Length: 293
Length: 42
Image 1 (cartoon, rainbow over the protein chains, first blue to last red):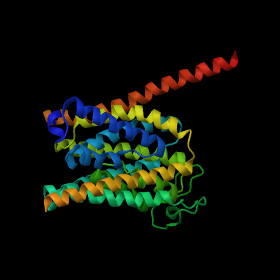
Image 2 (cartoon, each protein chain N blue to C red):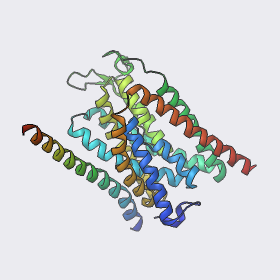
Image 3 (cartoon, rainbow over the protein chains, first blue to last red):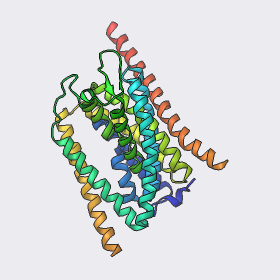
Image 4 (cartoon, one colour):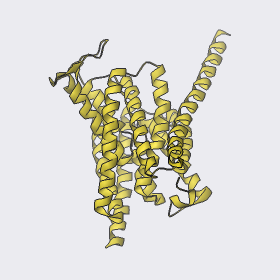
């Protein structure tokens, strides 16, 4: 395992552990406030703020995501919010996608070279954050029951979900899983950014079922990703565990704040936060490019 | 062997933390509910 003093080029020892715990605290608060894992903000900030190599940040973030999604999934499972059939199909396709995403990450690193790779990852995160900020800012159209894209697609075979849920196309569901997995394996994020809107708008599940089912998929996807990156020596518990400790405290703080704010302002704050982080990354990227050339 | 152990630790420790902390919070929630129910009955 990568030693504590080899992780960051800017901090070491207790200062590094404190900084990581602080980042976990922010990530946990975001998680409870906005229903995201927090990794989309944590991964680029590990690189930009602490100078941690992107591959190590991605691998360690997958271990962190594994811990946070396990707790959330256990809770939602107890509450009956996990749709088993969808979870299994999405998880299998998503795990395959995660393996592909990890390969793509390694390929990009090989093609770009060290310095350009860090800048390319910054660029990918900036574009992703801008896209999500735009999606979050505008109100999502309300879905009529049975009118979702996947329910109307006639791509066979279709599977029955049981209960009041309508049939959905298996290949279309698998494509959603692969896309979320690719994003997870490539960038170290949970993939909830794709899974929750897809389950809500494309499959047509209720919000609680979306969150519970997507957490189960994220759990298995991050497990696959953590194994792949861990086997390459590109994941560290020195990063993942302080993040998890901070996150456990942050989640409680986030839940407390969440009860005092409405849904609409929350969406707007989230979009503003993403824009702010994207702006910081852009400044860091420009600095890196200037230093490089 | 060391590599396998390393990967196992990378997976099992975060899993144990996630599930363990959730179980702990569940106990705290159950206790709080119990106390609230007791308070209401009084």
